[in-house]
Length: 329
Image (cartoon, rainbow, N blue to C red; front, side):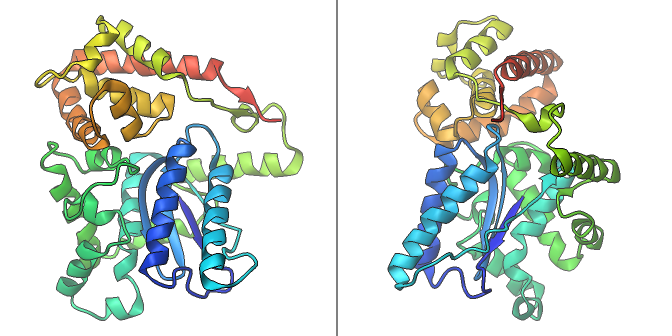
């Protein structure tokens, strides 16, 4: 999770034109830096992003986004100098349980201001569902899905079929208005570097301490960056494991998980976006890929052989990606 705000606590976005430009720049840099963006929320003087960096390039991505928006903002508002605080808060998240809870916490930001909390929950829910500068409305089908946001992992955590997931996720998030998740809010305060259980927080603090103290050269986690695999390599690995030709992924078949598996592995291991996977597989748009990915957990839950095959594919691709990692210079 990343959070950043204006250095002097003044509004970071003067109006909707500023917000729209930030979203455009976010979209462009998510694709350029091969980021897996799960959700975002823009507030008046800060923003929250939850994303994964397969290429280990969080700092590069954030610097590019910050620089682009600052140049735009200064030019439009006739000012100069830095805009963002620069010391953005980045926290590593442990597993699905904490990621799902974090998504609710972040998505509820627009209705957690002092003025909003004074309103009845019915009004707050209406505001939340209509809030333009958040990924939440598109998660629940109130707005068109963005191709630069990867909705599938968090929707899958909500459970149920692909059709049920948006409703289940909506209920999960909105339930946080009636019952504050005090336990999770307290958890956020326990570490400046991580969100998770005690052992996870201790491990992250240990790694950070070793790196800060002596840049330990034996710490593989810090001295290697994982490079994305070539898309053709990923597709060939998937095809071999499933016993099909790579051309099979280019053909639309009713109720077939082939393209969903291929798209999932391409996004995860080749570092491409849903739109990129759609182009590579000849599926038209990122929306088509998103629809396939929402069905994948259902197919996997119903087919043990398919789950085993996907596990073998992931293992093979992890090994290839590890052998393709490069040292930090």
